[in-house]
Structure formats: structure tokens, C-alpha cells
Length: 72
Image (cartoon, rainbow, N blue to C red; front, side, top):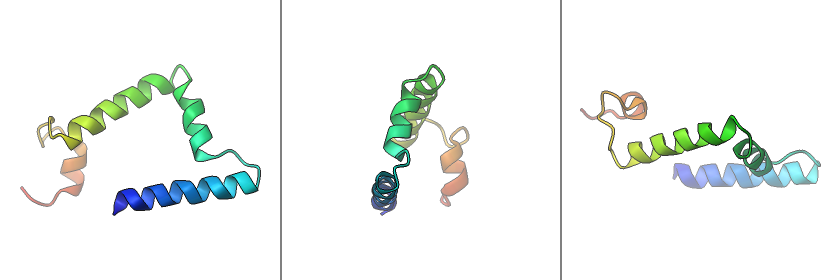
């Protein structure tokens, strides 16, 4: 359900931004991904997210699981 909410938020924001001639979140993400700082930052975050989702990271090192998971 959270993914649907995130997609809806991005789509709504982008629509409003286009109508008001402001930068969209999609354009900002693309611009950041092309910068010298953005590329390694996004690659690192993407790797961490993938490792988290596939549970390759032990719970004691996984900040997402430590913060949001209630089961031991």
C-alpha cells in the first residue's frame, strides 16, 4: 500500500509542478542522478535498499529493520 501512496504522491506533485511551471520531482531526480555527487549516492542507496529487501543484511546492521520491524 505504501508503494501506491508513493506513486500517487509523485504523480500528483509532478502534475501540479507542470501546471505551475515548477521543476518536477522526476526532473529533479534525473538531474541529481547525472551529477558527480548524485550518481554514487543513488547507487549506494539502491544497493542498500536491494540488500534490505532481500534480507542480505543481518538485522543488527540493517537500520530499516531495526527501526520499523517489531518482530524479533
